[in-house]
Amino acid sequence: MSQTLIVPKRGASAEPGYLFEPTTGSTPQMQYQPMYIDLAQEMHRERLRQAEAQRLRRAALRARRSLAGRLFG
Image (cartoon, rainbow, N blue to C red; front, side, top):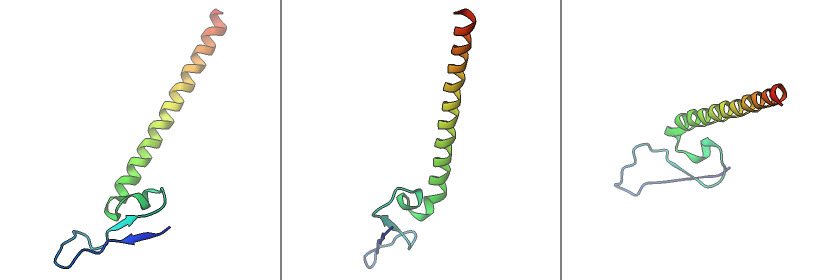
């Protein structure tokens, strides 16, 4: 995991002095600047929660269809 430090030119102002440009990796810590890591992690958790909810809905629908097929088929 390597990161490249972005150093502002003399006279230029960067809001936080610790901006990093990701060069490798796919974790939220590597994709986002440090100030956005919490937001990125929360968005990632929400996507995982939604994916799990969708998986459960599909499983429930398959179970209902299977039961209906056995009852009426």
